[in-house]
Every structure is written in C-alpha cells, then in structure tokens.
Image 1 (cartoon, one colour):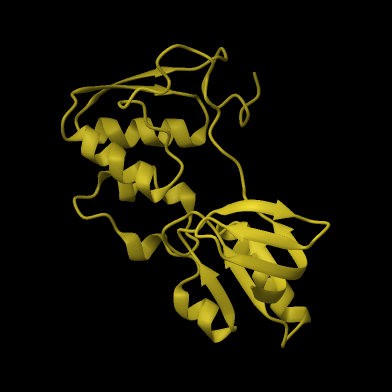
Image 2 (cartoon, rainbow, N blue to C red):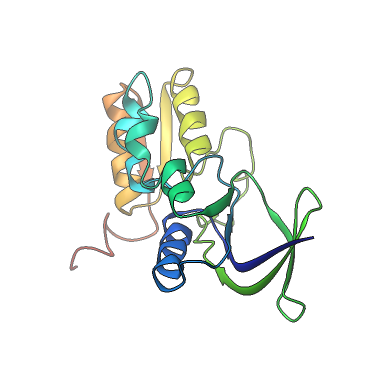
Length: 188
C-alpha cells in the first residue's frame, strides 16, 4: 500500500493548482495527483481552436503544467489512471490497476463533464463530446471523413468548435436549446 500525505484526484488545471497550493504551504509532504487524462494538465479551451484545425496538433502549446513542473516540486503523477474506489472514512483510494493509496488529506478536483442531452442516438459512435485531447483527436479524424457536422450547444466552446470545423471546409449546423447563441455571456 502506498502512503501519501496528500492525494489529489483530478489531473486537470484544478488538480495541478491544488498541488501547487499544497506545496506552497507544505514543502515536505508527499503528494500524488491521479487522473484519467493521458497527459499533464492542459488548457482545454484551446482544443476547439488551433488544436482542432491545424494539420499537426500543437500538443506542446496545450500544456499548462508539464512533467518537469511536477518533478521539480516532488509531486508524483499518475496520469491515465482512474480511481475505482474512494473511502474518506478509511482515507483510502483504490486505483484502476488495483494499487491502494492511503492518504492523510485528499482533494477532489475532477472537474465537469459535457451535458449529454436525453435524446436517442447520443451514444452512437459518430457522436463526439469535445472535452479531452482524445475527443479532439477523434473529431479531427471524423472531420477528414464527414462533410457535414451538427454541433449541439450554443456556448463559447460550441461556437468556437463550429467556427473551426467551418474553417476546415465542413458544412456546419448548430442546435441549441436557447433562443440565441452565447446566452450565458450576452444579455437578451
């Protein structure tokens, strides 16, 4: 069993920021960050822009915290790893590979997930939710095959993704449940 002073679950910007905050206040405590993402924390908002439309995805430009950043602060990283069980009373987390981490303090920084509308077909293979690098790579691949795309949503990410897909010469339609796009950002 692995023992850590601090366990941070969630390997996005929030998780990395939590590690940064812990390290500022505790220079010696042991810290492990665990998350399902395949790479260190990156700026998700860039996925719908250059990353989506450039011929070679600029992975380095996405990075917000790289592995050297974690290493220099003596923070153990467990990327591409899920937490299967979490027991706060026992202060124990079981990882997807069966390893257990006993911790003194934990921070849950798992972020959010895309809203999946309650309609038929949302689980089909040609429906992609743009949230991760894997999602963006799948969307890029699909854009090379398809000619027409429907973007569901009307927020900033949806509008940027639609614009990028249009720049890639796809026919793009948008569906949004509100009367106008960017309704969370603009007055009616």
